Amino acid sequence: MTEDHEADFPDEDVNDGRPAILIVDDEPMNLTVLGRLLQPRYRVRVANSGERALRAARRSPRPDLILLDIMMPEMDGFEVLRHLREDDLTRDIPVMFVTAMQDEEDELHGFEAGAADYLHKPIRGAIVLSRVQAQLDAKAARDMLRKNNERLTHQVDEGTHALEQAQLQLMQAEKLSAMGQLAAGVAHEINNPVGFVGSNLGTLEKYLQDIFAVVAAYEEAEAAHAADPAFDRARGLKRDCDYEFLKKDIAALLAESKEGVARVRRIVQDLKDFSRSGDTAWQWADLHQGLDSTLNIAWNELKYKCTVTRHYGDLPRVYCLPSQLNQVFLNLLVNAAQAIESRGEVTIATERVADAPGDGAVRIRIADTGCGIPPEHLERVFDPFFTTKPVGKGTGLGLSLTWSIIDRHQGRIEVASTPGKGTEFTITLPVRPAGVEAKETP
Image 1 (cartoon, helix red, strand yellow):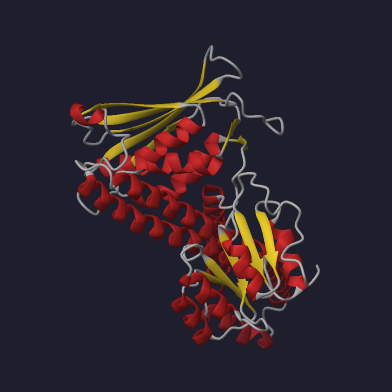
Image 2 (cartoon, one colour):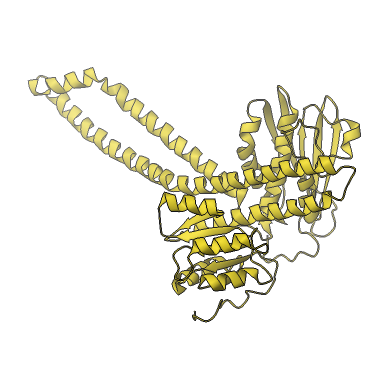
């Protein structure tokens, strides 16, 4: 990389639909490492000084996210951030500081100046990709809400109510973004220690087997020389500590511990499968796996008042955006749980649609035995900001988002409900949407 160029990535200004990221660092090696990590998923632009960074940030198309080094000559990262926040063109671009410093006061200063997050050197690829995507998701939510607010201000009749709901959605979007970022970090941080524990439990089990084998050999010697007083102390110790019970209980404790570690691993994997924070491309996916992962994520909402029944048919893999469909499943399952006041049942059924055109279609039904939806509300359940929940319990965008995702997949979603008996949502999806080129076979 040369000193007199702002960037050397050839596709920096080619708008191919991917989010654009500006990387700012005076060290060419750092620019290269971050650029190569991010370029497969994002459009990358780089700058090697604060002045060049400000010019690049103001130039159209403006970046969706800036990764900014703090320690730079002439103009450090804090000063660059101050200029960005003072400029109307760049004040809304999220900035993540990249630094080798671990000083809490510097971090607090950065957050007070308007930084969105910190990335610490040395760079760890999985954490960088997860946090970058979390910030891009949050910005996309803010941009969408900003446009909605602008549109809603012109709707005089419903303006006041819609703006209140938009503000609630903004708070919810920020909360979900923070929770998603936290969940991704927790899943990553849990994975390594769980691996250590699982490995150590296996080794401990082998060591105990060896120890018990040694003890068994001494017991044989004791039996052969029962009258020898040298074994009296050993017999007393075995009796005092209830050796036979300990021998059996240790095996049970190890089995329970290994089962617990396996459960933690499943939860972490389900969390990764559900969020798939880096997946923005169409791919072939197993919808049953997505449903099961989402059920585990939503289980805390369901387990206290619902029994869940699954009737899975023989489904082909579907070409889709898996993380978006998981969000659809989560919205419907949480709505079903909230519709049940005391005890009830949630049923999930899947089947392949016979005689569907093209590559075929699949159908997913999610039904509950909750309170149901009044007939006068059925036609509005997919409208943005429409909700029958108390203030603070819902934004009215969950089913609207669900409808948008299904529509993007060229599918359809239908609802049938009887007040007092329950509600059923039916989703029909093509195996491969028309016009969407599959890059691989299912």
